Image (cartoon, rainbow, N blue to C red; front, side, top):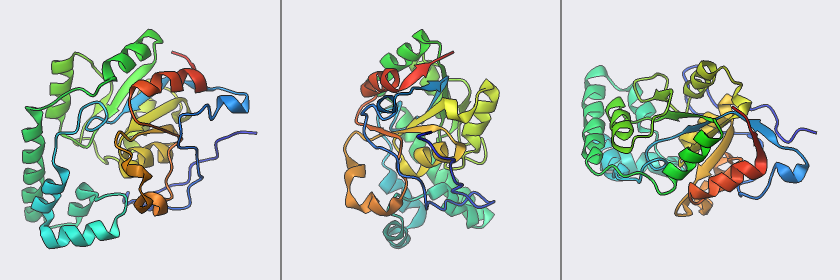
Length: 254
């Protein structure tokens, strides 16, 4: 009996998130698959960047308030338990208003480039994947300039590496499907790793991939996320934990 069921779509044709009615999965790093007497094949891992491969340096709350204004920020936040999707929100604005919003977002992102730090465990995890000849990809809602700086500063290159310029961006499954197509592997042989429930886990599940949520601080243990109805296959508090998770639950194949 298969542990995994087909992933229902979270998106309407214009890629608006419709998070609902998803199959519940384990959110611990226990041997979810191996205890069922089977290991799934894994050929590739796709990472989020900000807050996953890099230490969080962008003040998102301040950025959202700068874009939306205090009153609208509070209103939207109260209606979105999993977080504000600022990029999708501003898509309905006028072109002139969008231009100002994108510039504000980009300004905050560029301020964070000077403080860019690699996440503890990232080099070790990437080295482990390389030793197993497992493909590594990247999907971020940040700008290409940030991705290029990451590659240059830390000497770890991901391919494909899709930034905000690739449309539609997360939480649409399209970026992950594009990477799988480039690699010529099926999404059910790939894992999406990220620190966002609404972006990374949603993207991975909709594409049909395995998902791993990085929750360093335990913020997703809060009851405010209980109604999100969107659980990852695995949940870890550090990237270091993923090495043993992969070996315990997957047959790693090039």
